[in-house]
Length: 122
Image 1 (tube, rainbow, N blue to C red):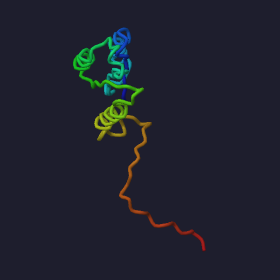
Image 2 (cartoon, rainbow, N blue to C red):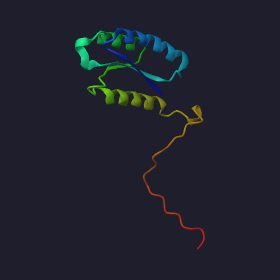
Image 3 (spheres, one colour):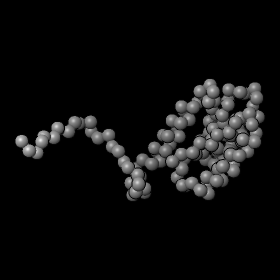
Image 4 (cartoon, one colour):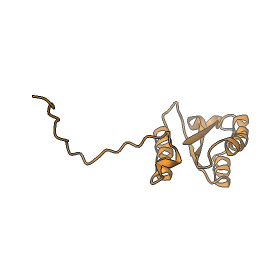
């Protein structure tokens, strides 16, 4: 599982919520959850209220990923989702299916086609 915490770099109050959200995640989410902090609206640097270093520092303190993005300009959006997805895959690779009995594992297989079944009666 993964969680992206997004704040608006032009809004100090939204950044202040990050610590509260992290606390809620620590209290209520699975300890294996991957987290990432995103500072959004990096296309509006002229209206910046939260320095990039502050986002980097809080991410470092909590040992989680950080990135600045712009949904409007499509800056780092795909990269953020890809990075979080890869981290989730890395963390879950090799885990036994008994960890979560409701989980279904799908393997791609060898790529060989199975022979067609013939009717049992002629």
